[in-house]
Length: 493
Image (cartoon, rainbow, N blue to C red):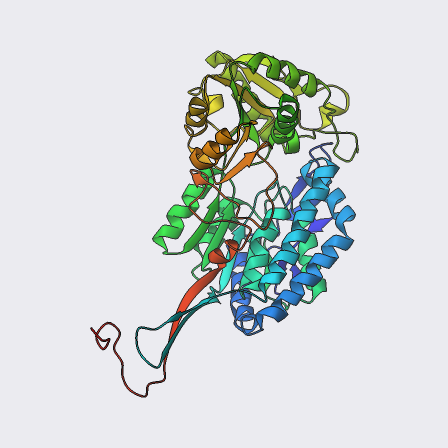
């Protein structure tokens, strides 16, 4: 199967004529070939998007929303089929893949509802016989760049609000997971989205991503990915005075206090740390535990990890799938070696799985370090794999300080029965998302998603806040006095 670009309602070969293999990370098999495009393909898509957006913006927002309702229904009808495709190209277990498709379904229905809202504001004027209001207007052509770990959910977080707000979209998905992009384009087409409003251009970041970022007719870039790439995109957009939304890395922590329900805490840690094989920006990579319960928590975590079945995510009994590719395996293993060298104690895991069926895929054993100090690299840098560091503290104040000591600020969690601890944590943890008696994952689409510090630049995916990325505010004054009135001058003293 060859995955082509989707430009102006047509499937097209890349101008380069080049394709790259798409690998199933569970088996190492090539399951498709994806277009490796060039700047000319981006330009063709952007020019078509620019023309189509002019007409799309004139469609009443409730009518635009009807397309998203149809998209949501089609996603719902094909949920199982899409989930299985997702598992094959990305590797996450089938249960999680179904959950990811459900995120797209939820986002479609939620953002379709915004088609009858897209609220602005009316406000009194300071002058007589004058009306004042502000309204949201589309920005034009939107460029979105998405990662491989959530190949359909993140695309819907970005494209659905952009489209319902009256923009046209050019999407560069990750080359590792192009099948979901192809299927979403087909669903948009079937739902009746006019040609030119949604485009998919495949390729690598330095070539295709860079061309999208630098194109003068792309007014907004919405990026989810690594901190390193996000910073480069921010620099380029800054020079171009281009609006940019960044959602980048995390170094998320679960705090376990001495009064916590340890059974619940273990469940939350296991799910947050080893779901998606740790390849989530919200994954728990640090456990900050009160010294009084550290030993017992470690014992329970070890028991739980030993029960995890690792393998091909299409097996319903598997709980941990492969990581995305060989490069990811090497990075994870490099950090494990760093942890050992820094003096952390390896409790379990710390190696690649190579025997039997594991030899064909990209599997890494769930790994737990203990006796980790907050200044160690494994406690500060994003590993993006199934690796957890346990850090001991003596108090809630110390736990909060350790949580806040890293450069990232996406997600944090606390397990405690003390309501006072809960409210202090809600106030003092400096992350964009805080969970109480739950793990660091599980965001719902009607709340803003994003973080502080090195995680992002202040914008949010999901929720009504997502519309801020893809709209501009226009202030409108209507003077029906029949004479020139000058604000701040002709007002009465």
